[in-house]
Image (cartoon, rainbow, N blue to C red; front, side, top):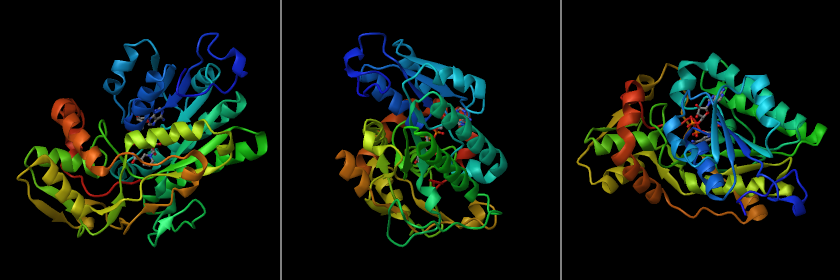
Length: 360
Ligand SMILES: NC(=O)c1ccc[n+]([C@@H]2O[C@H](COP(=O)([O-])OP(=O)(O)OC[C@H]3O[C@@H](n4cnc5c(N)ncnc54)[C@H](O)[C@@H]3O)[C@@H](O)[C@H]2O)c1
């Protein structure tokens, strides 16, 4: 029995015929590949649609070898391709997205259009084929609201549209509204999850992600570059817990038409994070500080803190994070110690510039 209940068949016919796969857009990326691991190890099959823009074939090569996963290299903007894939699946996790503060700030228009068009195509096709859909949104949609725990009904405080950073949040909000609109008007079985900072093996630091960058810097004995004074705080969830939440939400009929925060509320400042990484890698690295306006284009807006209220998810599914940030850092140290060389060759040109903020 797989970890995901099939959605389009009556129970008595389940698994009597060939298993119907699940589609993961962005499945060769960091979170998508861990989700694919989980589904395949649960005995189900996955179709992965990925343009390999920030994802890597290596993330899923081991799954392709099992014959239970297939990687289709293509874009979510390709309506014909997405329609053909959607007609073969039972459920879809829509994770494909241009991500990372560096990428978004460098190419705001590309990122905006890619995310808006891709989500329109994927969500529309899921609706058309009556496929169960989980759409990955982001805590970034809450914008600058830093006061307390953010819950699903919290107001959004966004900066002006001319600040590139906010294109990502707005594109994700578009996706949320399309998913919820289809659920309300067409009965589409869609759920929105707002992921907060997620960390773990296979995450690359190449696009502005702080933890893999700190781990790499510490392992190489380089200075850990903290942006600003390091007092900004974040909550980092282990990817394994996030994947468990995605699966739990997918399996719940009551989650249809709803929005859920996914993340941990264990808060840490970026400076404390740097110290923790140095300690766990037993590195001799020092910590350096870089002002935000040197790290990013003028007008960059940083957030003081971002902490989720996940009580809605916990009430509905019983989900609770099982792993700590220390676990995630240790797993990333192991991962980078063995496989990081390849990733650096590919993305190394960005890495020097990056650190202490994630656009999530
Ligand atoms: N990692 C986090 O902390 C975090 C936080 C909040 C939200 N999210 C969301 O989770 C999802 C996965 O993020 P991730 O951290 O794994 O990033 P990632 O970059 O590793 O994964 C995104 C994947 O999507 C693929 N992709 C991008 N645009 C595509 C397109 N148009 N067509 C096909 N494939 C495309 C990329 O190649 C990549 O494999 C994203 O939707 C992101 O917005 C992540």
